Image 1 (cartoon, helix red, strand yellow):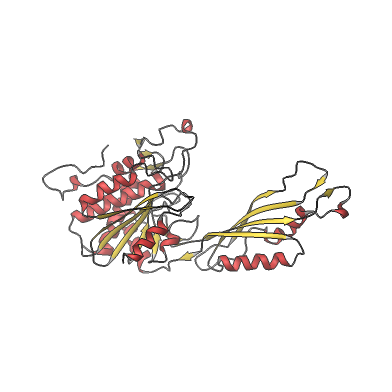
Image 2 (tube, rainbow, N blue to C red):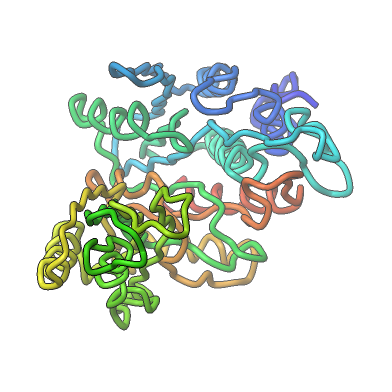
Length: 395
């Protein structure tokens, strides 16, 4: 299947439009495992430029990191300006022999498109590109369409969306609204959109003790016991009751290690890592203050190193979520639930420029062996994005 538009005398005819399934299959055939571009951004640029988009290839790198290819493409100069954001990079396939179909073959079979990135999120990108192509052919309104495509969403997210946003801000490219095409639907198209995301805070905790013989504990100081003392008040699942748009904040201990092979030796040190997915009742700063305040009261010698990959945020229900909800309803007959569940996405960065909401495909198989998505869902998503463009930009 080819992603190229069919040649014909009437370029605005429905037959001449891009097929979103074919575009998605071609994207899957680009082996763009982070940080490799794999030809995916080349393909998008080749599709967008004939549609009138001005494309900027943005390659960023920092010392000690892999260089990343990104793409910013815009058609139009006036407002309103709707931006679509997505990523062409994918996670590794794992054991390729475990796949029933080649992970980079982009196979269409049994009513599904198979391959790494089908759900997360090459299918979503293809649906938007096809929707933009269709919208432009029908005589667009006076607004602008842009695409922010990164190759660093599944990786460390250092040389991707954050740096593209800096470039956009420096060049006056400020959208009025943004939709991120992550797979947001749990089971069926129209189930859910994301109006925000929880923050992600990680603590690396080290407790210091004094090594000794377990038969003489009074001559030692057991750091494992100290570690339990520090973590126990927070080890019951939730840290609050939730807020208006968010579920409760949760804490999970993800590693505990004392590096001790002997059963008769009290270790000198104990370490643990914990992750907090937090709502808008907290910030990374307030969480760190809370943990340190609690730990300081226990009389335990400890060190705490923290990191935050993203603060919580919410785009209040309103104009943007209504636009998307109306477009989804027009195609599927469903009104999507407004949710903030799940992990983080690049929406956490985009929020600093404009209101941002996420809506995409069904995500049941993302990151799994035999990742796939229903062909009908890709076509429905293209219809939804086309309806959104008409509602947001006119025409």
